[in-house]
Image 1 (spheres, rainbow, N blue to C red):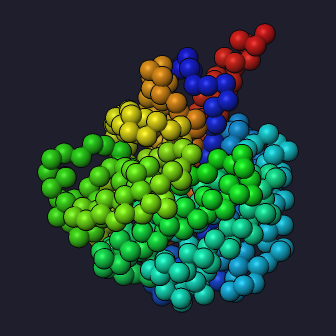
Image 2: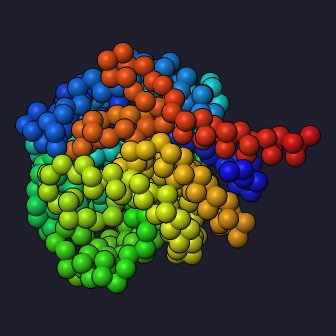
Image 3: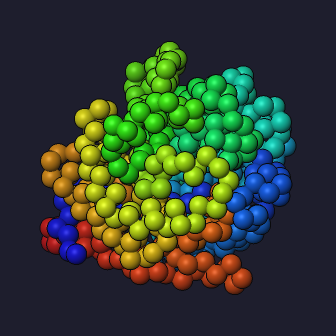
Length: 420
């Protein structure tokens, strides 16, 4: 499939990862003990993961091989502040070295400050259930912004706060394994308050920074039956597709049967971060710790057709918020590289169609860059553009990595020719 790209000259092509999934030995985090208590489906623990902290040049080489111009990665709060009030300068310097290497290679670093994982000490203080704990996050954000601010201009404060609240406090399949929708709503409320504080903290230190968060969106439109099920499911916080970003624009967080007025969160998004996942649709399997096996495989095989619904998602988001769109395709559940290629090709084609109609799409990213620890699914997924050999820690590109590289090269060639 060949595209005549109409995406902008400065379009951001990238990939993403999450620190806990790839760094390894995150021993001061709440996930560390939870994994060892049998939290994952098949008993996997993250362990060394991809050992990315000790393989900086390997990861940079992989990014260059795909020809991306941006990389979204998360810094680990539990590693930066392993004990309350104790910030590890060496860890901050390591992240700074990595961000500097990206800049040297012409790759824009996009930093996520929180991606599902908390320091143990923070979790022991009841974590995100207490609003006064948001001050700890704000202080952490200050430290990171001061350390990386001259290198990083695009920030994601919190990765998918809705997903974290639902899976940790409603479904109970992530730590702290709570099944209480009221506590889940309270957690989400406090996460968005923390986001608003982080937004203003970064802006005060880096005035030209671009700051937002991300929200998971299903990859297909819900049927009437689906909506009824979501409205009555105790595990669904809201049946509204974009309720998090609606809250950031209006100052009102609308749940299924209630709403919370939060004027402080209004106007704290510079872009709409859409994490688009075919395996994200609510399923009955998700409420248990059963092996998802064939269920995820089936949804993975359908990912290409689901991706066509990205057009609807993009148009609804563009119409509803009038902000630039940062689109990330989540690869979890795509077990076949042919389907992964179809998914990427379809998504790029849809984005080009949307751009022709005047919709501002600023970025496309694929997650994850490499096979890694997939949260409660452990190492059962092979979702990366690169296959990870967990014995040698080598990364080997799949055909999907080469396909994305060709798509980016074709896009860049168009603008090189137009400049001659």
